[in-house]
Each structure stands twice: as structure tokens, then as C-alpha cells.
Image 1 (cartoon, rainbow, N blue to C red):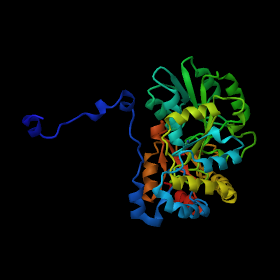
Image 2 (image 1 turned 135 degrees about the vertical axis):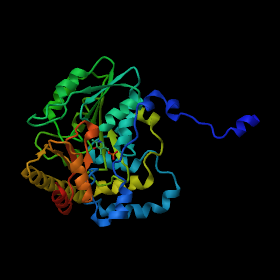
Image 3 (image 1 turned 60 degrees about the horizontal axis):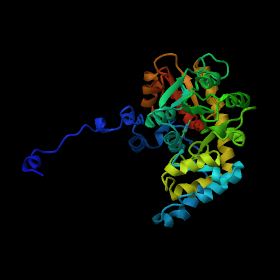
Image 4 (image 1 turned 120 degrees about the vertical axis):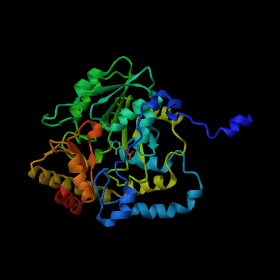
Length: 378
Ligand SMILES: *Cc1c(COP(=O)(O)O)cnc(C)c1O
């Protein structure tokens, strides 16, 4: 190095310019508030209804299993997640080779696009579909095809997926369609007959990704998991998570169920140790505690309907939901409402980023949390 270069101080770079075009078009995740700091300053008074976590908490078996597994953390985890896959395969009635584990299902939604999409292909999803669909598409530098949602006054699925329009939007260059049933942030769902008709219209070279992060909460007739269609459609991928109905958001475990052939493609790119040892053990313990899982489902359904009725009683528009959250339309800019709730230490999720500036998304908490929300509403 010349003396000149050594004396001229630190070199400046434009890191964004150096980033690949796909990354240049992305923005960093905005967590909203600094929750770890808020937990310290507010303590027990903080009501967290912004991230669709389950306030009831995980099965006590999870902590016990993790305690027993702690001495083994000096070793790498099982790269195949064999024990958890065996338990999942048994429960779901699929083969272990059809399963792919992820560091949360978010990682799997990204992995699908990384493996199958590229700049010469397009990816189809609904206008108010889960935010990660657009991010996964952008990360693969594929062309996004954003399909207008059903109208806000639709009788069963306001702002939900328009399956007819989604099927019609599939082009010759389309490689992936992302669907969520039920969807976040709308809470809306579609039934088995609608999905059957949709699948029949989709060519076999298009992968249909069914994000079922909230499937365990669904309690309406005629709506079942897309798992039932896996035998018929090798182009179908179902993703699930332990973050919501199993109350393990902090452990980061999700899974995809697909044809064996598609799962084998994921194995080429999946980070070998993407699910850590404690997460594998904890998820398996949670899966085994069916009584706890049932309690979470039943409690959530009861509280959701109670909270929805209370909110509607205050003249607010509450979207139908089969999840552990409610989308609430205040029919005016919701920024001030969110700020007022925050003043009372109640955290909810603003929806301006989704293009729904008059709405807030509210997680269904335990009764005391739901009451705090109602008391704090302006
Ligand atoms: C929460 C959520 C996920 C992903 O959660 P992970 O914690 O990454 O498993 C996926 N899809 C939808 C629709 C969600 O709301």
C-alpha cells in the first residue's frame, strides 16, 4: 500500500450501491417499537398485542425438555431434524421425506423463492397477502404480480384473496403463487371448494404455496388444511409454524410439507443447521402436549369472539377472523388511535405499511389484556 493511501483516512463506500439490485429494492424490517426496552421500562404493565403471539404461553413440557437438552448445546443440532420430523409425519399422516424444517416458516417462504424464482419468472400473490410474499419475491429478483383483493364490503372475505383473479393472473412465466389461509393481516379465509376449483386451474409447473400459519385456529365448517390435496398436486407446498398456536415464536420453528421431489430441492439450499437444538426439542415437546394446544385454540376462539363483539359494540368495523388477531377499521387515519393506545402501554400493529392506514391489527390476548385494550381506546 502506498504511503498516500495509508494517510488518507478511512475509505468511504456506498454499501447500498454495492448491494445487488434485488437487495437495493428492499427495506429493513421495521419492528415498530423497541419492545425489549419497553419491557424493562413498563414491566408487567406492558400489553403486547402487536405480533400475534399467544399470551397463554407454551406448554410447560417445552421448558422441561429444553432444560434436559441444555448440556448438549456444545454439539451441532441434528441437521435433518429427524426426531421432530418423525413426530410431525405421524401427526400429519405424511412421510418424513415430505417435510422441511425452517428457522420459522418465514425462512421457508424465502427459501421457496430462492430455489424456484429468478428474474425471468413472476410470482403471484394477493394485494393484502402476508408481507413476506413480496419480500421473498424481491429477494429472488422475480417479477411480482400483485392481484387486487376482494372488495372491503365482500360478505365473507373482505379484502381477502380473490382466488378467481389470482388464477387468472398466472402467466406463462409464473413459477410461484403465494396464498395464506387464513391470511395475515386480513384474518380472512377461503373454503375447501374454492381451493379445489383454484388448484384445478393452476398448471403443474406453477408451485402453489399455502401459508397455514393460523390453520390450527380455524373452526368453521368446510375449511380444512390443504394437506389433504398433497397426494393429488405435487406442485403444492403447505407451510406451518410453531410460532402461533403452539406459542413458540421465540424458538423459531416452522415446517413445509410438500412432495418428496420438492423437499429434495429445498435440501440443496437450506442452511444445514437452520433449526437449533433447543428449538427442535422444544417444538417436539409442544407437539406432544395436545391438551395444551386444545386449550390455546378454545381460549383464543372464545376471547376473539368476545373482543370482536366489544369492538363492534363501540361502532368499529371488525373484519371476520379465524385467527388469533382482529383487523379493525377506524374509518379515519389510525395513527392517533395507535399513539393513544401506546400512551396506555398497549402495543398494537399499524397497517399503513400494508396500504390500510385506517386499520390497526390487534392480537387477541387474555381477558385482562383485551380489557386494557378496550379501556385505552380513545
Ligand atoms: C406469523 C406468520 C408467519 C411466520 O411466522 P414464523 O414465526 O416465521 O414461523 C407466516 N405466515 C403468516 C401469515 C404469519 O402471520
